[in-house]
Length: 274
Image (cartoon, rainbow, N blue to C red; front, side):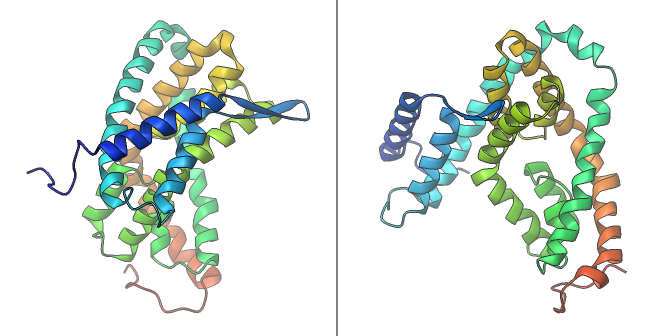
């Protein structure tokens, strides 16, 4: 049954999006030189920022939760078209992907390394069992479903995963785009390595992060798109199994060991795992 509160013919929303896109494209690509490299700002960054500002402004009453839900559905459609394009480009550069060997698969283990940093930091900020939901992944739809199935969304773990899901939706693409540009400009990392790192399991984040690379290295744009797309596909395909068998048990283990040391003196918001 469709949600009657969501009107797909909301002309105010469509007009607002069109104006944001026109303004963002008119601004174009802005490069800020820094040392030997530069930070690149793309139209996607502007459009995300403008949309976020309009959503947060209380005076703009025609952009609220209902419009956000509708816009999310259109984003899914747009990302689907983008992924199809990436698939075609990946096929054209399949030899380069094969030559990368096990690197594309082994780079998935790097996603687990973030748990070692994020979970202790979350405990230092005062989070309890929420830290498990927050830190085990980037909290996209499959991981939200996994946490909901294991713990329930009303649990501390469920609240934690939803916090990261919302934050990732609002600012994840902006962060990924800036990080990709900075790494490409100020480090010796190969563009292929950065492209593989953009495939975190989110189509929108991958698109935002790979766009600066394509702009900065036009001679290998096809290969960059191929590595990013293949990496994102692998992250999406095996990410849920990585979470089930490694990430969540690892997060729970670290929580049991580190919470008595790093946790602030607050009553845990849920029962400890026995």
